[in-house]
Image (cartoon, rainbow, N blue to C red; front, side, top):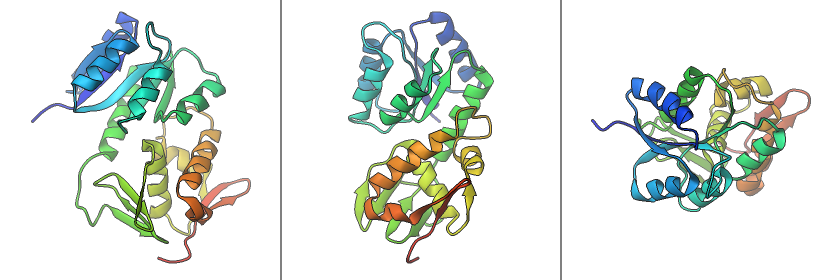
Amino acid sequence: MDRIKILVVDDESRMRKLVRDFLVRENYEVLEAGDGEEALDIFYREKDIALILLDVMMPKINGWDVCREVRETSKVPIIMLTAKGEEEDELNGFDLGVDEYISKPFSPKILVARIGAILRRSGKGDAEENRLSAGGIVLDQTARMVTVDGQRIDLSFKEFELLAYFLENKGIALSREKILNHVWNYDYFGDARTIDTHVKKLRAKIGPKGEYIKTIWGMGYKFEADEP
């Protein structure tokens, strides 16, 4: 069976080696790039990359521009690695379609755990068991596809997972902490406002159906559809 392929992009060779060693131990196949230009060359050449670990500050082409170009043709999960920890940078990454955002220094074990969680959620399963629907929204977890009244909608990885969690918990009030723990995993140390940013974008993408995601002030959100 072919190993899952991960592209690690960082201009620091020691950082690439550290990440690679931990990933290889988990039986992943690791591809490496030392700058953004090399990363894009590998991305276009290798058609079965399952996930990209992407540094922000790099020579030739920076991480933001690499992410922007990848997102023009692919929804492959992207984890952004950066030495910066400012909220503005994090929100910028999510606007570009970044799925996870990790500031250096970080725990390699935590990084590997997050990668595993993302890839497990992308796994295959029984089509019927992996289909969720409500109020004209149909989410197919096997095909990683969402339709609204029959019209396909493109969502980022985290937007998809957030919508799936809402559909799995229709009519249930969900705190921001619960959402953060389930969708972003228990080891996420970011700001809960990340959820609000993703909810805002998700509402916009599903159009009038966005009103199904009700805000519970001071707590979180609840998904309520007018029809099954």
